[in-house]
Image (cartoon, rainbow, N blue to C red; front, side, top):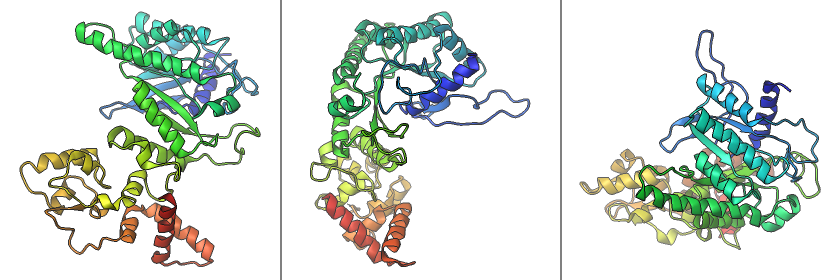
Length: 436
């Protein structure tokens, strides 16, 4: 098989891994132009400063000794197989980089022969790039669960970010759908990477020129919707992973049916993209807004509200915490207000040192008053002409797109072409009541 054939197979097989925050693009340069984003496997990731980075997202091989039922690359699946030699993949990466197609590499792999052998091939690829070609661009590499700890440590010394996919939210689900894998084998390298990153921080402080270990940290990914775990169970696991292993990100991947099996959703089932979206919103609240999993969901209400985002849902269910006075509220209180984000909360703290804030000033600072006005006061006063009721807050916190969906669904149920807004509010209220 020629190099382009391998590239087609192994970039196509890599598309199910979402842990590089990527989106595909198919754009060719015009005649006489330089550079191109067309071609197999070019995807986009985003740096901490907001820059968009093009990555070659590819597998070392899609051959695998494991038979995970949810995976398109499983051993029993009849699919074309290919594998790069370390030199082939390193050369390919450098050729793409020199042509300005990419800025970095996202490298994962099926398990070829055994975890140690696969990890050694990945390491050899990165070693050629780093030591022979002197490539210092961004590299995200997947550690192989079950590989020797020394190999995982070597991988972290060569890559900018290392990740170990936890795959499924519980031990029982892993045993059912991925019998060749174990929770212990996944968590062991995750703990090793976390400890090594922590040790390396001290080394860098003591010795300025000490080599950095996985300077972009580590992440993981879990599949959503293939197994019966609730949003509450998934969010609780996510919170524990952040606390225990200091992960940079937990990625959620809505399950895409790729095979027929009694233990999997129907192949005709649609990926639970809305559920994935709510989990990402909740993940943001855990990482930047000071929320905990138990505040957003609990055993009685284990699923997210389909009509409003988790922060708004929490605020509606805790009206006793509001309103807050924006001229005196602590940063943590401001972050709990719908319509006030991290940036606008910091702007409020800075601005109120020199002036007393009113609603016009808040709008200038980037606060979404359509939402926030139901939960704040300025100088002890509500917004002029505002009537604060639960229904009014619901209407403000539900997006136009979601309200249109409510209108459509309610009309179908009632057999009418038009429906009163009051009925929509009742439907949302009922949904919220079930969440409480």
